[in-house]
Image (cartoon, rainbow, N blue to C red; front, side):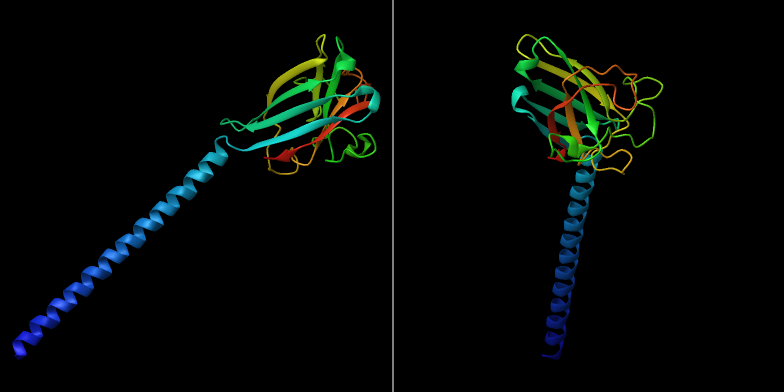
Length: 200
């Protein structure tokens, strides 16, 4: 009887040890899976995947129009902008577009303040020796007043530091063309469209 008790106790101890081992492996597997998912999410956010947009609305009744700006984080770390505009009253003309400091379209777009210029450079043409991080440039509109532009910049981030972050800035559409010379705004005319950049 005493031997039987020892055998029974031994079997019980083996069973408990096996159960504990399986449970530990299950927990380790779940931790690895969670780490893998977290790592994959971080990878997606770094290598593309971050997006932002701005819906552009007219600021004046006599220049009704609209637009859509979409920003995408690219794998090389730059941000791509695709902007589409439709301002029929401006058909067959060119309009200047800039990113402005504040995400505020109040007072006919004046709430956006001046061009976004975190590097404190002179106003100029995109890609020239000196230009504002918000100096996008001129867009040609067709006979329907429609136009689009696509460009990328490593000066921009979606949610980065204050010198590069485009979130909570504004896109301003002007009634005239940017001469790329006049400081600090390029003599681009009044503000006829405005949209605030927000994360998707």
